[in-house]
Image (cartoon, rainbow, N blue to C red; front, side):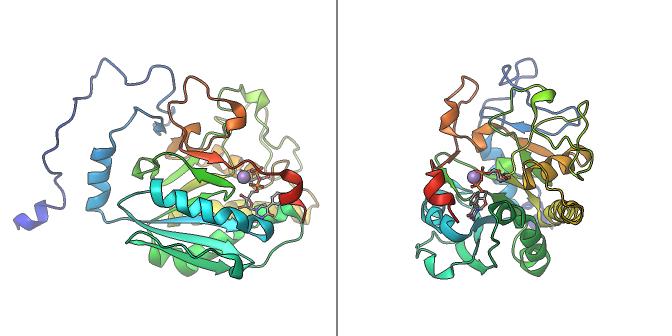
Length: 297
Ligand code: 2GW
Ligand code: MN
Protein backbone atom coordinates (compact mmCIF):
# COMPACT_ATOMS: atom_id res chain seq x y z
CA UNK A 1 0.00 0.00 0.00
CA UNK A 2 2.62 2.52 1.10
CA UNK A 3 4.85 1.43 -1.78
CA UNK A 4 2.37 3.07 -4.13
CA UNK A 5 2.94 6.46 -2.53
CA UNK A 6 6.56 6.39 -3.68
CA UNK A 7 5.30 6.89 -7.20
CA UNK A 8 3.23 9.96 -6.48
CA UNK A 9 5.31 11.85 -3.92
CA UNK A 10 8.61 13.59 -4.51
CA UNK A 11 11.36 13.25 -1.97
CA UNK A 12 12.32 16.10 0.35
CA UNK A 13 14.11 18.80 -1.65
CA UNK A 14 15.66 22.09 -0.62
CA UNK A 15 15.34 25.15 -2.82
CA UNK A 16 14.44 28.81 -2.70
CA UNK A 17 10.70 29.31 -2.53
CA UNK A 18 8.92 30.82 -5.53
CA UNK A 19 7.87 34.43 -4.85
CA UNK A 20 4.30 35.28 -5.86
CA UNK A 21 5.19 38.95 -6.19
CA UNK A 22 8.51 38.56 -7.97
CA UNK A 23 8.55 36.82 -11.34
CA UNK A 24 12.00 35.35 -12.08
CA UNK A 25 12.09 37.11 -15.46
CA UNK A 26 10.44 40.43 -16.24
CA UNK A 27 12.20 40.99 -19.56
CA UNK A 28 10.46 38.22 -21.50
CA UNK A 29 7.03 36.66 -21.98
CA UNK A 30 6.94 33.44 -19.95
CA UNK A 31 3.38 32.36 -20.68
CA UNK A 32 1.18 32.49 -23.76
CA UNK A 33 -2.45 33.70 -23.53
CA UNK A 34 -3.50 30.03 -23.80
CA UNK A 35 -1.36 29.18 -20.77
CA UNK A 36 1.51 27.44 -22.47
CA UNK A 37 4.85 28.12 -20.74
CA UNK A 38 7.60 29.76 -22.79
CA UNK A 39 10.86 28.25 -21.59
CA UNK A 40 13.61 30.73 -20.73
CA UNK A 41 16.58 30.36 -18.44
CA UNK A 42 15.48 31.18 -14.90
CA UNK A 43 11.82 30.23 -15.47
CA UNK A 44 12.03 26.66 -14.12
CA UNK A 45 13.73 24.50 -11.51
CA UNK A 46 15.35 21.53 -13.28
CA UNK A 47 15.67 19.50 -10.06
CA UNK A 48 11.91 19.47 -9.53
CA UNK A 49 11.27 18.64 -13.17
CA UNK A 50 13.88 15.87 -13.21
CA UNK A 51 12.38 14.31 -10.08
CA UNK A 52 8.95 14.31 -11.74
CA UNK A 53 10.14 12.93 -15.08
CA UNK A 54 12.39 10.29 -13.46
CA UNK A 55 9.35 8.98 -11.60
CA UNK A 56 7.67 8.39 -14.95
CA UNK A 57 10.74 6.64 -16.45
CA UNK A 58 10.22 8.49 -19.68
CA UNK A 59 12.14 7.65 -22.85
CA UNK A 60 12.99 10.33 -25.41
CA UNK A 61 13.61 9.94 -29.14
CA UNK A 62 15.76 12.56 -30.87
CA UNK A 63 15.23 12.51 -34.66
CA UNK A 64 17.56 14.00 -37.26
CA UNK A 65 18.02 13.64 -40.98
CA UNK A 66 21.42 13.34 -42.62
CA UNK A 67 20.83 13.03 -46.35
CA UNK A 68 23.63 13.26 -48.89
CA UNK A 69 26.43 15.54 -47.73
CA UNK A 70 24.71 16.35 -44.45
CA UNK A 71 26.15 13.11 -43.00
CA UNK A 72 29.18 15.24 -42.07
CA UNK A 73 27.15 16.85 -39.28
CA UNK A 74 26.18 13.63 -37.46
CA UNK A 75 29.31 13.06 -35.40
CA UNK A 76 29.40 16.47 -33.72
CA UNK A 77 25.64 16.44 -33.33
CA UNK A 78 25.65 13.18 -31.37
CA UNK A 79 28.85 13.83 -29.45
CA UNK A 80 27.54 17.14 -28.17
CA UNK A 81 24.10 15.61 -27.46
CA UNK A 82 25.83 13.04 -25.26
CA UNK A 83 27.16 15.89 -23.14
CA UNK A 84 24.07 18.10 -23.03
CA UNK A 85 20.84 16.46 -24.21
CA UNK A 86 18.58 14.87 -21.58
CA UNK A 87 21.49 13.77 -19.43
CA UNK A 88 20.38 11.04 -16.99
CA UNK A 89 17.33 10.04 -19.06
CA UNK A 90 16.80 7.28 -21.60
CA UNK A 91 17.51 8.54 -25.12
CA UNK A 92 17.27 6.99 -28.58
CA UNK A 93 18.91 8.83 -31.44
CA UNK A 94 17.07 8.17 -34.68
CA UNK A 95 19.24 9.16 -37.61
CA UNK A 96 17.51 8.98 -40.99
CA UNK A 97 20.04 8.71 -43.79
CA UNK A 98 20.55 7.54 -47.35
CA UNK A 99 24.26 6.84 -46.61
CA UNK A 100 24.31 4.24 -43.86
CA UNK A 101 28.00 3.55 -44.45
CA UNK A 102 28.92 7.11 -43.52
CA UNK A 103 27.44 6.87 -40.04
CA UNK A 104 30.12 7.36 -37.37
CA UNK A 105 30.86 4.78 -34.72
CA UNK A 106 30.29 6.52 -31.39
CA UNK A 107 30.36 4.94 -27.95
CA UNK A 108 27.30 6.12 -26.09
CA UNK A 109 26.54 6.56 -22.42
CA UNK A 110 24.47 3.78 -20.77
CA UNK A 111 20.76 4.05 -21.47
CA UNK A 112 21.32 5.76 -24.81
CA UNK A 113 21.37 4.19 -28.26
CA UNK A 114 21.81 5.08 -31.89
CA UNK A 115 19.25 3.79 -34.39
CA UNK A 116 20.11 4.34 -38.06
CA UNK A 117 17.11 4.34 -40.38
CA UNK A 118 17.76 4.04 -44.10
CA UNK A 119 15.55 6.28 -46.21
CA UNK A 120 15.45 7.40 -49.84
CA UNK A 121 17.00 10.72 -50.79
CA UNK A 122 15.17 13.27 -52.86
CA UNK A 123 16.76 15.29 -55.65
CA UNK A 124 15.58 18.77 -54.72
CA UNK A 125 16.84 20.10 -51.38
CA UNK A 126 13.44 21.58 -50.65
CA UNK A 127 12.01 18.09 -50.88
CA UNK A 128 14.79 16.63 -48.71
CA UNK A 129 13.73 19.06 -46.00
CA UNK A 130 9.97 18.68 -46.52
CA UNK A 131 9.85 14.88 -46.70
CA UNK A 132 11.04 14.73 -43.10
CA UNK A 133 7.40 15.20 -42.11
CA UNK A 134 6.28 12.11 -44.01
CA UNK A 135 9.11 9.96 -42.66
CA UNK A 136 8.59 11.02 -39.05
CA UNK A 137 4.87 10.36 -39.47
CA UNK A 138 5.45 6.86 -40.86
CA UNK A 139 8.03 5.86 -38.26
CA UNK A 140 5.86 7.18 -35.43
CA UNK A 141 3.38 4.37 -35.99
CA UNK A 142 5.91 1.76 -37.08
CA UNK A 143 8.45 2.21 -34.39
CA UNK A 144 8.56 5.32 -32.19
CA UNK A 145 5.25 4.55 -30.49
CA UNK A 146 6.72 1.27 -29.17
CA UNK A 147 10.09 2.68 -28.17
CA UNK A 148 9.74 6.18 -26.73
CA UNK A 149 7.29 8.51 -24.98
CA UNK A 150 8.41 11.84 -26.45
CA UNK A 151 9.99 12.86 -29.74
CA UNK A 152 12.26 15.83 -30.32
CA UNK A 153 12.71 16.59 -34.04
CA UNK A 154 15.57 18.88 -35.05
CA UNK A 155 17.94 19.98 -37.83
CA UNK A 156 21.26 18.13 -37.99
CA UNK A 157 23.49 21.09 -38.92
CA UNK A 158 23.66 21.97 -35.24
CA UNK A 159 25.63 21.40 -32.04
CA UNK A 160 24.62 21.36 -28.38
CA UNK A 161 26.53 23.89 -26.30
CA UNK A 162 24.50 23.88 -23.06
CA UNK A 163 21.93 21.76 -21.25
CA UNK A 164 18.66 20.75 -22.92
CA UNK A 165 16.58 18.72 -20.49
CA UNK A 166 13.06 17.66 -19.61
CA UNK A 167 12.00 21.31 -19.21
CA UNK A 168 11.30 21.23 -22.97
CA UNK A 169 8.89 18.27 -22.82
CA UNK A 170 5.14 18.68 -23.14
CA UNK A 171 2.31 17.25 -25.26
CA UNK A 172 3.31 19.33 -28.27
CA UNK A 173 5.94 22.04 -28.42
CA UNK A 174 7.45 24.47 -30.91
CA UNK A 175 10.41 26.84 -30.80
CA UNK A 176 10.61 30.58 -31.40
CA UNK A 177 12.64 31.20 -34.56
CA UNK A 178 15.80 33.13 -33.60
CA UNK A 179 15.29 35.60 -36.43
CA UNK A 180 11.74 36.62 -35.54
CA UNK A 181 11.15 36.47 -31.79
CA UNK A 182 11.12 40.27 -31.54
CA UNK A 183 9.35 40.85 -34.86
CA UNK A 184 5.83 42.18 -35.38
CA UNK A 185 3.29 39.95 -37.12
CA UNK A 186 3.68 41.67 -40.50
CA UNK A 187 7.30 40.66 -40.67
CA UNK A 188 6.66 36.96 -40.02
CA UNK A 189 7.55 35.07 -43.20
CA UNK A 190 4.38 32.98 -43.17
CA UNK A 191 3.02 31.76 -46.51
CA UNK A 192 0.99 34.70 -47.82
CA UNK A 193 -0.48 33.27 -51.05
CA UNK A 194 -4.09 32.23 -50.59
CA UNK A 195 -3.62 29.39 -53.09
CA UNK A 196 -1.35 27.54 -50.65
CA UNK A 197 -2.62 25.31 -47.85
CA UNK A 198 -0.03 26.99 -45.62
CA UNK A 199 -1.64 30.43 -46.09
CA UNK A 200 -1.95 32.58 -42.98
CA UNK A 201 -3.83 35.91 -43.23
CA UNK A 202 -1.89 39.06 -42.27
CA UNK A 203 -4.06 39.68 -39.20
CA UNK A 204 -3.42 36.25 -37.64
CA UNK A 205 -0.47 34.48 -36.03
CA UNK A 206 1.01 34.28 -32.54
CA UNK A 207 4.69 33.59 -33.11
CA UNK A 208 7.00 32.56 -35.94
CA UNK A 209 8.05 29.01 -35.15
CA UNK A 210 11.26 27.44 -36.44
CA UNK A 211 11.07 24.43 -38.75
CA UNK A 212 14.16 22.96 -37.17
CA UNK A 213 12.88 22.21 -33.65
CA UNK A 214 9.55 20.75 -32.58
CA UNK A 215 8.33 17.76 -30.63
CA UNK A 216 5.92 16.27 -28.15
CA UNK A 217 4.38 12.91 -27.37
CA UNK A 218 4.59 10.39 -30.20
CA UNK A 219 0.82 10.73 -30.72
CA UNK A 220 0.96 14.52 -31.01
CA UNK A 221 4.00 14.43 -33.30
CA UNK A 222 2.14 11.93 -35.45
CA UNK A 223 -0.78 14.38 -35.75
CA UNK A 224 1.51 17.32 -36.49
CA UNK A 225 3.57 15.54 -39.14
CA UNK A 226 0.46 14.00 -40.74
CA UNK A 227 -1.09 17.44 -41.08
CA UNK A 228 2.05 19.02 -42.50
CA UNK A 229 2.68 16.20 -44.94
CA UNK A 230 -0.87 16.02 -46.29
CA UNK A 231 -1.09 19.80 -46.69
CA UNK A 232 2.21 19.69 -48.60
CA UNK A 233 0.77 17.00 -50.86
CA UNK A 234 -2.34 19.08 -51.48
CA UNK A 235 -0.11 21.96 -52.54
CA UNK A 236 2.06 19.68 -54.67
CA UNK A 237 -1.08 18.57 -56.52
CA UNK A 238 -1.81 22.23 -57.21
CA UNK A 239 1.77 22.94 -58.25
CA UNK A 240 2.50 25.24 -55.38
CA UNK A 241 5.12 24.95 -52.64
CA UNK A 242 5.06 27.08 -49.52
CA UNK A 243 7.67 29.82 -49.23
CA UNK A 244 9.63 28.22 -46.35
CA UNK A 245 8.77 24.63 -47.12
CA UNK A 246 8.06 22.46 -44.05
CA UNK A 247 8.43 25.50 -41.77
CA UNK A 248 5.43 27.21 -43.41
CA UNK A 249 3.15 24.20 -42.86
CA UNK A 250 4.38 23.87 -39.28
CA UNK A 251 3.44 27.50 -38.64
CA UNK A 252 -0.01 26.87 -40.08
CA UNK A 253 -0.46 23.85 -37.79
CA UNK A 254 0.58 25.75 -34.66
CA UNK A 255 -1.75 28.63 -35.45
CA UNK A 256 -4.82 26.42 -35.15
CA UNK A 257 -3.42 23.69 -32.92
CA UNK A 258 -1.68 25.71 -30.25
CA UNK A 259 1.51 24.25 -28.78
CA UNK A 260 1.32 23.31 -25.09
CA UNK A 261 4.86 24.63 -24.51
CA UNK A 262 7.16 26.96 -26.46
CA UNK A 263 10.94 27.01 -26.36
CA UNK A 264 12.76 30.34 -26.36
CA UNK A 265 15.52 30.92 -28.95
CA UNK A 266 18.01 29.68 -26.31
CA UNK A 267 17.10 26.29 -27.77
CA UNK A 268 17.83 27.21 -31.39
CA UNK A 269 20.34 29.93 -31.95
CA UNK A 270 22.63 31.09 -34.72
CA UNK A 271 25.70 33.06 -33.66
CA UNK A 272 25.41 35.08 -36.87
CA UNK A 273 22.71 37.01 -34.99
CA UNK A 274 25.04 38.05 -32.18
CA UNK A 275 24.00 37.56 -28.55
CA UNK A 276 21.17 39.82 -27.36
CA UNK A 277 20.80 40.69 -23.66
CA UNK A 278 17.68 38.48 -23.18
CA UNK A 279 19.65 35.42 -24.22
CA UNK A 280 21.22 34.14 -21.01
CA UNK A 281 22.17 30.78 -22.49
CA UNK A 282 22.77 29.34 -25.96
CA UNK A 283 21.97 25.65 -25.80
CA UNK A 284 21.83 24.48 -29.42
CA UNK A 285 23.54 26.47 -32.13
CA UNK A 286 23.87 26.32 -35.89
CA UNK A 287 27.15 24.92 -37.20
CA UNK A 288 28.48 27.38 -39.76
CA UNK A 289 28.27 25.76 -43.18
CA UNK A 290 29.87 26.54 -46.46
CA UNK A 291 26.65 26.86 -48.39
CA UNK A 292 28.21 26.14 -51.76
CA UNK A 293 30.24 23.11 -50.77
CA UNK A 294 27.64 21.48 -48.58
CA UNK A 295 24.59 22.37 -50.56
CA UNK A 296 25.73 21.43 -54.05
CA UNK A 297 23.74 18.33 -54.69
C1 2GW B 1 19.17 21.56 -47.42
C2 2GW B 1 19.24 22.75 -48.15
C3 2GW B 1 20.07 22.85 -49.26
C4 2GW B 1 20.83 21.74 -49.62
C5 2GW B 1 20.74 20.57 -48.88
C6 2GW B 1 19.91 20.47 -47.79
C7 2GW B 1 19.86 19.24 -47.01
C8 2GW B 1 19.12 19.21 -45.82
C9 2GW B 1 20.57 18.05 -47.37
O1 2GW B 1 21.25 17.95 -48.43
N1 2GW B 1 20.53 16.95 -46.56
C10 2GW B 1 19.81 16.97 -45.41
O2 2GW B 1 19.82 15.97 -44.66
N2 2GW B 1 19.08 18.08 -45.06
C11 2GW B 1 18.25 18.03 -43.84
O3 2GW B 1 17.28 19.06 -43.85
C12 2GW B 1 19.13 18.25 -42.62
O4 2GW B 1 18.58 17.52 -41.53
C13 2GW B 1 18.98 19.74 -42.39
O5 2GW B 1 19.30 20.12 -41.07
C14 2GW B 1 17.52 19.95 -42.76
C15 2GW B 1 17.15 21.40 -43.16
O6 2GW B 1 18.08 21.90 -44.10
P1 2GW B 1 19.12 23.06 -43.67
O7 2GW B 1 19.53 22.80 -42.27
O8 2GW B 1 20.20 23.13 -44.68
O9 2GW B 1 18.28 24.34 -43.85
P2 2GW B 1 18.05 25.59 -42.81
O10 2GW B 1 19.01 25.53 -41.69
O11 2GW B 1 17.99 26.82 -43.61
O12 2GW B 1 16.60 25.15 -42.34
C16 2GW B 1 15.46 25.89 -42.00
O13 2GW B 1 14.53 25.93 -43.10
C17 2GW B 1 14.16 24.65 -43.63
C18 2GW B 1 13.14 24.84 -44.74
O14 2GW B 1 13.70 25.57 -45.79
C19 2GW B 1 13.56 23.75 -42.57
O15 2GW B 1 12.31 24.23 -42.12
C20 2GW B 1 14.53 23.67 -41.39
O16 2GW B 1 13.96 22.89 -40.36
C21 2GW B 1 14.83 25.07 -40.88
O17 2GW B 1 15.76 24.99 -39.80
MN1 MN C 1 19.56 23.89 -40.46
